[in-house]
Image (cartoon, rainbow over all chains, first blue to last red; front, side):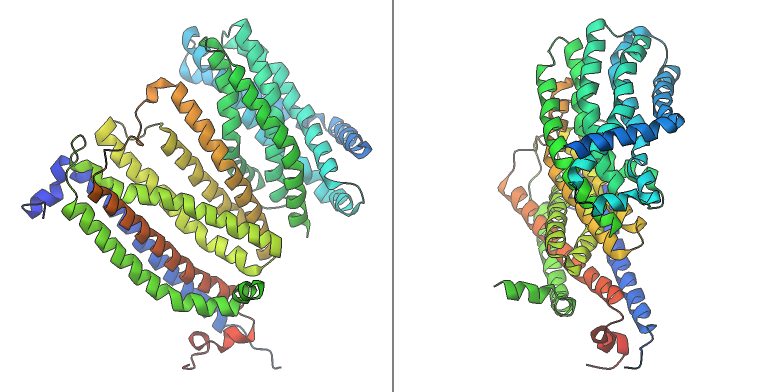
Length: 56
Length: 221
Length: 249
């Protein structure tokens, strides 16, 4: 393990803002995308359920 | 080959009936070229530096403005459908329309640019290179822009949408076009730039009518 | 052989395949991601020149790679779609675009955050970053075009054409930006001059890249299902799906 303490880990040798700014934004966008995909799926399902079936 | 010339003549004649539309692009170019010194300051040394870039961007934007007009009129009155159904080569017809667009939009820019270049205190050689680079570059802009125009026929937000589609594709022409003038000014020589502009022009002339035809068929099916 | 491919080109078959695949891909992505981050943050050494700040490359480089790979994939599906006129190709391209755009944006964002401490400015007109910016615009253009056209099939085909034209232009754009960059010596800093890579750094980057790849495949499979349901909702097989009809399989 490279880091002696958690505070050292968050600090990243002074670069903490940049490193965690990058990792954080990446994580946020990935989570947002997953959430958006799920929402799209649910609304597609809802749309499909409203399809009136023509009696064949 | 006849169909090519027919289309060029036809488009030119149609445009002459609506001269105002054609002149719009030209006026836009002049206005944009005037805005930059107003925004940045009149110092000649700096204007000389930014001049080629500003004029090239102005030419690019002016060309973009006129792109939606390329097929829109024919689309609305049904002539485009006739063109698609006719036995003539659609590629040749499209090339005719692109040529007409360039004659109406690009050539005035090529002629005006050196005049506006005087406002930027560009040297005589720079002015010649500016014209040459625009002469080689504006046809590429018309060719590539035509693809965007074909794809966005009748789509809402057409003008801005074309810009978004076509600007990334314009970047190489801009880099080498404006770069040619700067290379000349800095003493490096612009042969490479001019060669590359030519190298972009020839494939554009071949590839674009084909891609445009595909785009038109997609738009009209 | 051709028959097998066309079998999967049919929406119902592809739907079933995507439904089976995405959970595994997601788990793979998570596992690879954890491994990559562990190597990257717990094991990889400090860089001599860039200190701890270089660790941004563990997301920056994979994001850049994915943004380019995804665009190529979009071009591939576009060529397929225009050649064989399959509905699925258009859906795949549309499913890929948002993820590609996201990775392009992340590449730019992380690139800026990397550049600021290293080179002092938030933006460096380096050839790679500038090309990445233009790639981002290409993604936006595709998404704008496909959402502006109402007719779905026309939108798919128009998008396919612009994706192909864009893909052909990407090397030209990259070349011209590289040329432009080397001429204007002011921007002689380069993000491509990466720190001399220790083995562990490379491994971390590779694992993260694979993780992003698996993630992309997972999310595209998931997204394509939604598109298929939406577009094919009038068909019997969609209506018969347990998730739609509510009937347990």
